[in-house]
Image 1 (tube, rainbow, N blue to C red):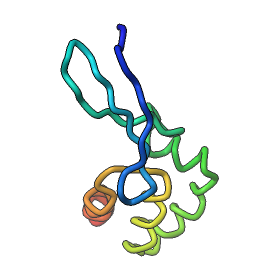
Image 2: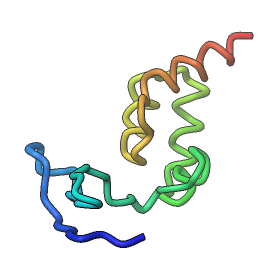
Image 3: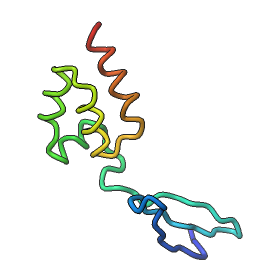
Image 4: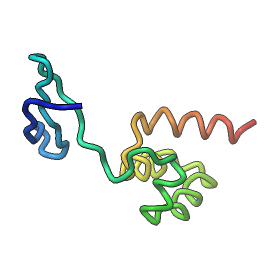
Length: 91
C-alpha cells in the first residue's frame, strides 16, 4: 500500500491526532492507532492498571465512574457499553 502524501494534523479539540492520507488522487482521513488499538476492554483496563477500580465501580453500580474509566482507555460509546453491562448485571 503506497501513499502519495501523509501528514499529521491535530483536530480542533487538540487531543485527537489524525492523518490526511492522499491515495490515488482521493483524500481521506484516518486515525493514528492508539496504544489500545486491537485490545479488548478488559485488556485496555488491565494495561492502564484500572481493572480493580473498574470492578469496584461495577459492583457498586457507579455508572459515572465506569464511564470515566472506559473513556480513559478510549472505549468508543462508553456510556452505551456501561448501560449494557449494568443491565446484564441485574439479570
